[in-house]
Length: 374
Image (cartoon, rainbow, N blue to C red; front, side, top):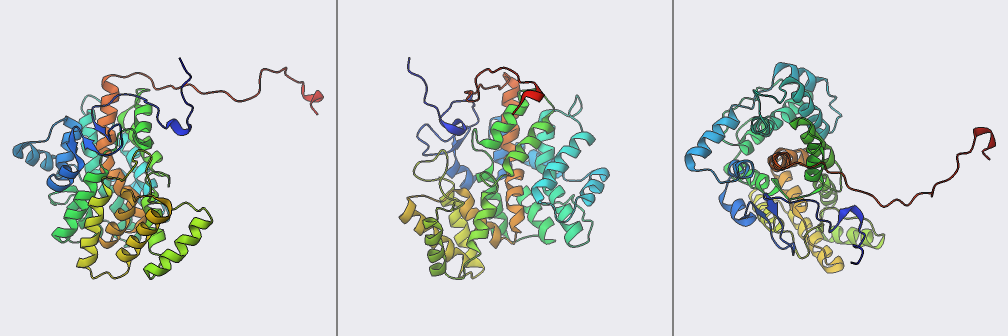
């Protein structure tokens, strides 16, 4: 038998089995429990998708109504958590707010007989927007907001807390679609982190908090922030092309393009791109979307690289009036559904995840007394 090919970062290595999500062996599609992402993004709400991921089936109309009401009831922040959020500096990154808030909630509402893993998954999905925006409004506007709103969906709830009023239907629809697109993506870095931590059998919050930490990096969730920082630098498409060509000559990394598991295109990108275009038209944008398209064209022409979900999500979120530093936290709100499904799947058939490594260090050698070291 030939030795397996050595690859960095576990690329191409099968690290487990899952019934939750796949991009296919060829990396040409994306399905959540067998349902195409195209159908889900067009026809399902995020709450339907969360139910699918956590329970393995799409809800009936009655089940969906009950589930939405359940999530609505879980939006309030416990008073001790409000105090903690108020102590986090205004200068903190919003991802750090969610990491800290999620961990703190685990001490206030610990997993146990009265609070099982499904209850915690639902609680975190419902309360993460409340955590983030309570902290934001307290430090940016000097207001202690009420987070228990009657908005019908997580998307509407998030935008309402951010802007202080209900958002237009188009905005809520785009936000909801983006949550669907970000909900799950098989064994990505943060999900695998959640499963690795879960395999040691800690509480549910520990695994979720670890996932947030993995998502914090620019090579994973932070790519949408980096994409926005690039796009908004330019005043015209021509300027964008000129600077981008120079960046490519200097071999600088362009965030928002290419993907570890997709070979031809990211099936989620075309969906969010259409929403970004609709939003740009609705707000009479004449720069941002055009710049985005030119950057995409240059990357296809020069590097044969396609945009991933993060690239057009950046402009879509910008058109929704969402601060750039909140882009990755939105990822957390959505992906908590997928992370939770994976943690539960790992627990159901657990085996400690403990890979081996190829040692490339020194061979065994004699210890040298300190006075004899040169």
